Image (cartoon, rainbow, N blue to C red; front, side):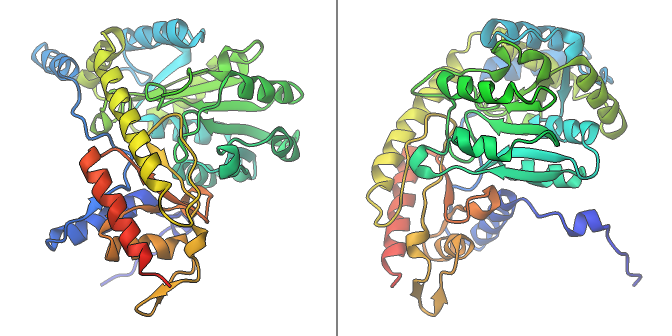
Length: 399
């Protein structure tokens, strides 16, 4: 058999830890083991019926052909109106691109804007793909760290220490995956004040969890004075509308940036699925009550998990304000062992809990938080109670 050498960029790219853990959980499940999977960021709700029906109607009407690379004008108009009404962001349709998920939006942006060696500042802990996509596009990720005691919000001093004229982009999400952190008006005001001294830094705000927010309001950094012309806002339908499998995301930004992203997307995938886009219009222009009901259930799950996770000895747990994740600090268990298995780090602890608690979590090392584990509470309250009890029982065996 011939041997083919894969590219260096692929060799040095890290596999998605969330997808890897989900695959391991599925493999154990296929052997008849009852695995509770808290590794994936996927709501357990079905897509609301009115959105599914819109896709069916679009199919029946023959909306099955190629779409413009940047998305149908009808959907971009709806996105533009949504941005203005809900986020106070003035992105006209020609400053918006629709992609195959928010992940592609971010990838388009990095390949369109980054040259080899360009610095990209990333609030940490971060979504796993930010770091890898930046590297794949030739950029150099630089983390702006935060700690659980500060609810994972980087301090102004930490931000200042990493800012420099050579930095090209700043990336963060709010609500945040993996921490559930929401940056409030005061937080963003403080960041904007510091960023004023770096006018050529492109700010990238990932707002995909916008509709899943509990104790505060959502604020878009692009809505602050002087920020719209230097901010790219990423969003999509996966989380707030439970449309993960539809792969439909969008991005608004300065026209030169969006034009460059359209050029990239035109060579990779062209336009997103036609009839999905018509369903997207329905999602944005219809009553959001189904999304609010999902949000309210997530809040109940958040409160339940917060109460239960605080009973685990040694774990440091904050109270997330949005999304559906916890990122507890768990290094209390490093160095402990059971049946010859020594827990050296969070990777070992995640593997231990998969095998001995039959619960799939993700190591925090994938998110820039090596002392932590990420827990997705996107399952029913009954499964969450059982999973956390399994975790407690398995951790109690470590000595």
